[in-house]
Amino acid sequence: MRRPTIGLCPEGVPYIGMAVLVTIFFALVKWSLPGLAALIVTLGIVHFFRDPFRVVPREEGAAVSPADGRVLEVRSRPEPVSGESRARISIFMNVFNVHVNRSPVQGTVKAITYRHGRFHRASLSKADRANERNVIHIHDDEGQSWSMVQIAGLIARRIVCWAEVEDELECGQRVGLIKFGSRVDLYLPEGYEVKVRPGDKVYAGQSILARKAEQTPIHV
Image 1 (spheres, rainbow, N blue to C red):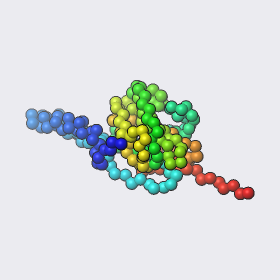
Image 2: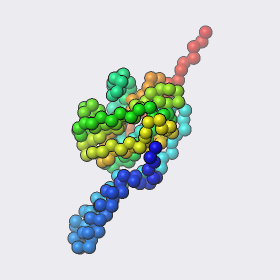
Image 3: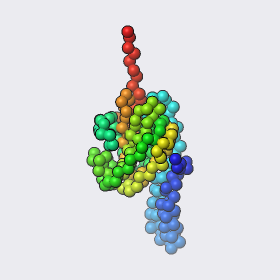
Image 4: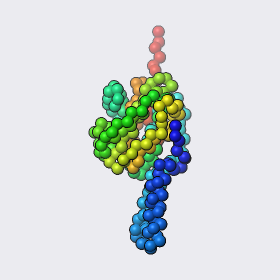
């Protein structure tokens, strides 16, 4: 897997560099207002591509959030490739959120499926079917299947996936990035209970979204 540096995503360097050059140009020609605006934009781009350190909970049977943002929806929906009905947690990322995506569980990447599409607002219900998206299929240590879907939004124009097929992932490990506003859907396997509600604020690699349901012992 191609790993980004901690602190700032390398994918943001070209954008930051261009913004810095524009800011310097306005400063040299002494255009105060455009220079101030360019400086604000530069700081905004740096803020967008930040990649902070996260403490991943080491709780057996827990799945962490794959993205920073707000929980849009929790409901059963067909998994985008198999069509199998599963519990889905949708997380919307605005331009102020960290946009680095992380693995919800420890496991192996079994497949990566990219779909071309449009760029509707990511919070719309049709975005999961119409928008550009990338599905990362992960099998956990018990062989259960998880589907993490990176969905491009109205402003986002590129999905970045660092994960590769057969990668062994740690829970909370960085797997990708979506540039400038987007959404991530997580499809749970059977036997997991959702621990968040619509409107909850979550953090990638840190917030617990679901836990494995406790089995009630059978008394003979």
